[in-house]
Length: 183
Image (cartoon, rainbow, N blue to C red):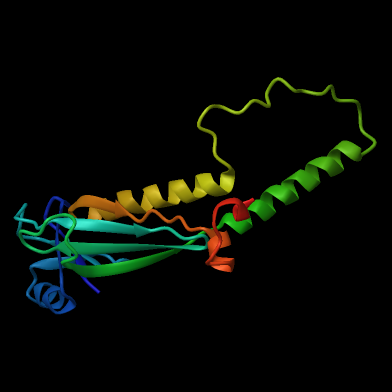
């Protein structure tokens, strides 16, 4: 696992190995900035040369993978010559959010069925704005954006790649399916 490095003004530099981070800290050239992910801050350096880092995002239904990779020198973006610096795995809270919304709706139904004073129905506030997403999906988007911004403050990321995941579930069940058989 790579150790993230910040300069004196907290600008991201290239991650280093654990051994180099330990040597810098022992010599008094660096201090511990953060424990997770482990980040050091150099006390005597401002700025510096950095290499191209790419953040790879692999979406999934329950978990999402993030990989911070260093591109090979002089490599084209479509080449597969990359060195992985660190990996992260995010577990989505989609099911927890769904259960919490169901419980909130049950509380609301319970309040409505009580023997209380009459409340006039309010229906003019129930429109959804354009670009609305379900709460579980909105959480997923916000979480990924938060992690990308957070890693961008720790490492000099120059590119982001996301795997587009689409597959045919009917083709998984029957590989020879064609044409009208889809109906």
